[in-house]
Image (tube, rainbow, N blue to C red; front, side, top):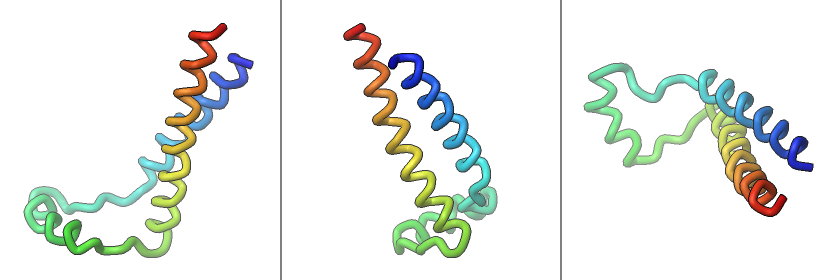
Length: 78
């Protein structure tokens, strides 16, 4: 069981890294750092593939956290 959990955690970790790297950047260098704060406060919604990647990232991050807690529990109770 613990081997299965560790393998699943590794798969989710790699997928999470790939999805985060595929996302487009939210800022355009230094000028984006200055003007990007206003866009984040207004809450500009992502469109197209950005929205899909955002939902996938949220799901994978949740799975990563849950799997991490599960693996930690399995290790301590094995």
